[in-house]
Length: 128
Image (tube, rainbow, N blue to C red; front, side):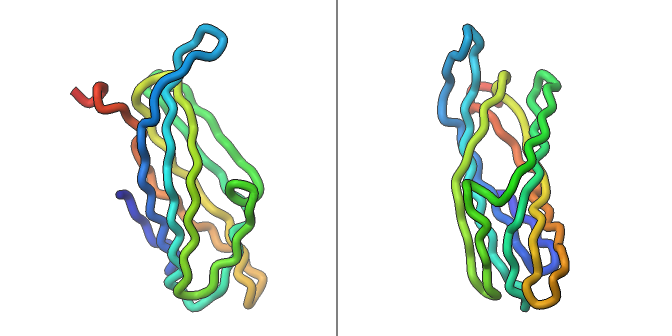
């Protein structure tokens, strides 16, 4: 599990290879990941949006931005936790993701950028 803390907000990531599939005669590798956000700060925050950087071993880069995560903009009080699962697909069996969550501090209306640590996406057979 990969973890990183930004101003008391801990992001933990666990990724998994889910299998392969074909789309329009192209082979894709499907990955899932579980994100856990622990609010160890003294502030109540709301996750407003995210920005992902996705890279695969073929040097294909993708940026994904949007509101919230999995259709939600959760409010996370101090000492509370929020988890969700999502996924992506790559054209190669190896890749990586990282990014940032933009969170709204409810007490002072400030914006907090919380780092999503770099984590690897890989198949077992590609590690040999």
